[in-house]
Structure formats: C-alpha cells, structure tokens
Amino acid sequence: MNRDLSQTNETAEADSEQTYFYNSLTSEVGSAGKIEVARDSVSEPVIRSWCDAMSESNPLYIDQDFANDSKHGGIIAPPAMLQVWTMSGLHLGNQFQRNTEDSPSAGVYQLLDEAGFTGVVATNATYHYNEVIRPGDLISASQKLLDVSEEKTTAIGMGHFVTTETIYSDASGKQVGSMEFRVLKFRPGTGKKSEQSEIKPPRPKPASNSSTDWFWDACNIKELRIQSCNECTNLQHPPAVRCLSCGSVSLDSVIATGKGTLHSWAIAHYPQVPAFDYPLIVGLVELEEGVRLVSNVTNVEPEELEIGMPLEVDWLNVDNEFTLHQFKPVHNENQEAEFENTETGDSNDQTFDSGQNNPETESTQRQVLKLDPDNVQIGDELPISPVPVTTLLIVSTALATRDYQDVHHDPKAAQSKGMPDIFMNILTSAGIVSRWINDWAGPEIDWSSIELRLGAPNHPDDTMTLSGSITEKTQHGSQVSLNIAFLGKNDRGVHVSGNAKILLPENSKGGLK
Image (cartoon, rainbow, N blue to C red):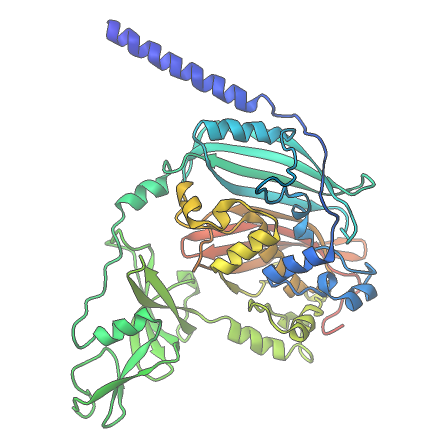
C-alpha cells in the first residue's frame, strides 16, 4: 500500500511540475514585444547578394534601367526578403549585440532550451505583402506571441510548437508586411525517425566479382560504363566474360552518356526490405547507346511513369561506402525547347530554367516574359523544376538571408541537435519557390502572400522537385489574381507545400515586352 501511495505521489508531483512548466511557457501568450528597428537600411548590395544566392534574375531587383521603366520607377526588394531586414545578425567577439530580451518568444525559447528542447526547426510561415520595399527604407518589426503548444510527439522529436506574429513597418510607421511563424523546439533523439534510423539496416551492397568489379568501381566515381568488344565493337550489359555477339574475350568498356528512355517498369510493394523506401520503382532503361539496364527510377510518382519517358542517370551515395546508379526524369530539355519558341509561339509555352547563374542576357530575356490573363485557367500546371540542393546552396542562402544558426552551416552542430546533416532554412525555401513563380509569371507580378509548410528537410545532395498548379482565378478590378498550390519534394517526401497568391500586371499580353 505504501509503495502504491508513493508511486501515486510521484506521478502527481510529475504532473504538477509539467503543468507548472507549461504554464510558464504560456504565461506570455498574447503579449507583444518592443519595436525592433533594423540595424541597416534596405540596400541594393544586400538585394544583389540575396539574388545571387537564390539564382533570382528578376530585373526589377537587379536591373536599374528595367526597374526605372517599370511602374515602380526603380529597384525594389524581393518580397521574399521581408524577414531578412530585421534579422539579428551574427554575434561573435565583443561587437555590438542587439537586445532580444524584449522579444516575447525569447523567454519561451530560453525555458525550452534549459529543459532540454535544444533542437529547433521552422515548420510553418505565412507572409503577407502590403507595400513594396525599396532601397533606403528602414524596416522595423514588432513581434507578438500567439501560441505555445502542449508537448507533441513528432517525427523528429518530442517538443513544443511556438507560434509568433510579426508586423513589419517602414520609417513612417506604414505596415509593409506581416509574418506568422511557427517553429518546433524539440528534444534531439526522441523522434520516430531517430528511433527508426537506429534499427534500419544499411542498403545492401550489390554482388560483384572479377568480371563486374570494374563496373561498380566506375559507379563509385560517377561513371556509367558499358562493356564493349574490341573485335566487333558490340556493346552489352550486364557484363559477361566474353562477347555475346562474336565470342571474343578481348573486352573493354565505354563511358555512357547517362541518358535514355524508360522501356518498361515494375513497382515493388511487398515483401518490403527495411533498407529500401516504398513504393520502389524498378525500371528497364534503354540507354542512348542501345543497351538496356535495370535500375531504380526516382523523383517521379508511379502514376507519372510513361513508356518512352526521357531519363538521365542520377547517383546515390550509400553511407559514403559505395555509389549506385539510378535514373530520374529529364524535364529541362523539353523546357528549353519550349523556350526557343516563346518569341513567336503561344504565351503558355513559358518555362522555368532551374540552372544556376545563367548569363544575365539570357536570364533577363526569360524574365520579361508575361502571362496573358485570358489564357490562364484553373488547373493549368506550372513547369516542373528540379532544384539540386548542394552544401553551397544551403550555406550561401542562409548567409544571404542573415540566418547564422549553426544548423545551416555546421554538420556537427546539426547532428548534435537531432539532424543528420545541415539543412535548408525556411527563408531559402520561400525564396526558391518565389523565384520559380517569378520566372513563370514574369517580373512585374504583384505578390500578395505566400504560405509555406515544411516537412522533410532538404540536405546536401538532395534534389527538390517543384510542381504546382493554378487553383483559383479571380478578377480584382483590372487585375487578375491567381492562387498557386505548390509542392517541393525530395526523395524522403514533401519538403515544402503551400499556396502563393499573385496579381498579374494590367493589360499583360504574351511574348516579350
């Protein structure tokens, strides 16, 4: 009886402590902090640095002559930079530091850190854009704490969601925009994914022998090789000990282009091997060289598969031990072909090129394309765009957005906080989605809002594929408003999803301006 009573008392005490802790977290809900004025005015160099990192080529942001001739009469800041201007910056040594104690979320974050909730990841952000921001503007921010959730169990860890609202104003006090921001503060190592990763076996290494070692060695340096006969020049796969055409044992190999088409495929659902993700697409790929090989097909949904679909080789590094070939759809070639016809063709042939740092002349030409509102309909799809995620992209965009959190540039710091590697910040996700829509719709659209929900993180060597469609079209006076639902997916799932609202320019017509 005493033991039962003791256990009851311990449970009651734990519940009381948890209640007290949660009450402490929520004590400031509804309160607003002091107005924080940006350390620096909006400037063109910072805008250009952001555009460089995002590969954003909208001439309204970087081309003085184009911007002067626009309705804005000069350079404007990308709307997706709204949050950037009041970021606290990097604090090292003894230089000036801004006082953040007046922020209503600061005390909440401190309590959570002290309780072991040291991991942090942004989960949601909704930006509303009220006024254009120009070089010389001095932006201020006022934050309000909206909500602190009870403890939740998530895929990456047990933690609390903290939601804030920030109002951004210019020096005159006029509201230029607002942001509702939600972050998860979690205990590293307590999530479902962490538990699964501990027991998930490594991907099996392909069987090899003296006749095939050369093929897998080539894959390790990202070369796709095909066995060739020195006597009759026959190409064959899989490798054999002699030529299947003439019987010669004098064999060599050639480097394939890595391009081909989907000849057929099968989708494996069961039985499942824990090391693989399902559904597993196994394709028979016909290479440009005329031979066929079996390989996984990635970056595509099963319902999107088509016989004859253009594919290109993609490389999968397995635990830094070996590299495997796989194939993904080719999108850019068709998009480039469509772009070549835009000067004389239909306005719906506009495309997005996800390439980094294109020549300015080509970027500017692409950017001055406009949509014809009369030809835009609900259900129209935006061009699919694969975005390679590199360490350089993650780090450079974090710096360009003035986000110096170590999880975006320091792998060890990211791992200590429950992540396998550095990961893309939400400001970059917003910037890349905005760039993609700008390139499709043209430079002179007006941005109303963008809502983002984050899921699977973007890590180095990922490829995020953007897709979207028009879900609403409404008339606002002489302007047409569009709602665009979008997805950005990597191999682990959906990285970002949400909705963007834009206004098309008045009297916009297809073709070059």
